[in-house]
Length: 120
Image (cartoon, rainbow, N blue to C red; front, side):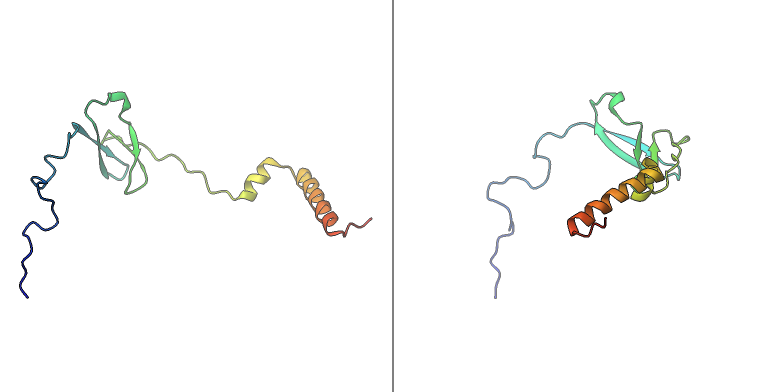
């Protein structure tokens, strides 16, 4: 079976040249390099007309998760991470043992009242 298809299959008639050169205005960009404590470099692009104070001094490095800064010789130090706390640990920070006992007794009384099993 002979193929009689168009050589420009998938393009519209009159669409013009293929490529990005005719697809609108491209804003001027600047490239800013950031380095983390492991020496990883991350390059970010920003608009060329962006004021220097709006370009961030530090970012989170996508490859390591560490903070990355613009000074290659002095990358930002890793902030000490707080250990993971469970919900119970946070509750214990807010309540004393006496308050916890009182709240538990109130909750049990409400539960027993709903079930009709309150003992006198």
